[in-house]
Amino acid sequence: MSASLLIQAEHLNLSLSEQNVLNDVSLDISAGEIVTLVGPNGSGKTSLVRVLLGLLQADTGKVWRAPHLRIGYMPQKLEVHATLPLSVLRFLRLVPGVSREQVVDALTEVGAIKVLNSPLQRISGGELQRVLLARALLRKPQLLVLDEPVQGVDVNGQLELYQLIGRLRGRYGCGVLMISHDLHLVMRDTDRVICLNRHVCCSGHPEQVSGDPAFIELFGSRAASDLAVYYHDHDHKHDLHGCVLTPQIHEHGPDCTHA
Ligand SMILES: Nc1ncnc2c1ncn2[C@@H]1O[C@H](COP(=O)(O)OP(=O)(O)OP(=O)(O)O)[C@@H](O)[C@H]1O
Image (tube, rainbow, N blue to C red):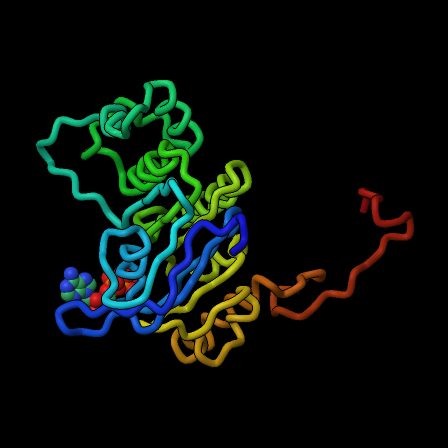
């Protein structure tokens, strides 16, 4: 077993209300690796994450976690009661042993320091996602588990948040397991994609998965070409009609700036 292995699941089977939800699912995540789980609605992604976190018991199969593994979990959503008088600061200080300074640092890191003293139920959906990410970070995780982290975030914010997750992986060397529907945004920073439809349909590097017939059957050729575009080596420019332009090298050389 590799020293950097954080978590490993083998042959998981799970039924809920007599419905088969996970069928012989295996996966592993190592330190420093970003693994993205994709799959249609109801394909078992959240259930798998819950089994990995130990919140749900699989019927058969086993989950191995590195000893004393610290996991930071960002749930898909958080229901905040409208009348609950809880500021963001107080909410984050509910994480055991966390000081005000640590909260300030974590909120700064995720770009949400301005909501430090705001009531939790009044911040926007995108701000809440950042606060939940800050909460996950406050646990100093070795493994960061993110269930659709950019829900409710506008398009620019989505890209920014995914880039932030990539940076956090670089800074802390943690492994990241992420559920996402935003294939085209998330894939650039993903090391491995696992395509789940109650069983693992295919997995591998995004480039490899985008060409897999099981992926195309599940998501359609549009999604596959979206992924492929990311890995297309774009060393040229197009005109307005999409035709490739031949580079015009100026007689004074490529660095010359005048017309
Ligand atoms: N507690 C439960 N009891 C019964 N069935 C459940 C329970 N939780 C989930 N399910 C069912 O298990 C299946 C998988 O659900 P899950 O939430 O894991 O899917 P998902 O891939 O995360 O979906 P989405 O992309 O919509 O979030 C669904 O059909 C769901 O209805």
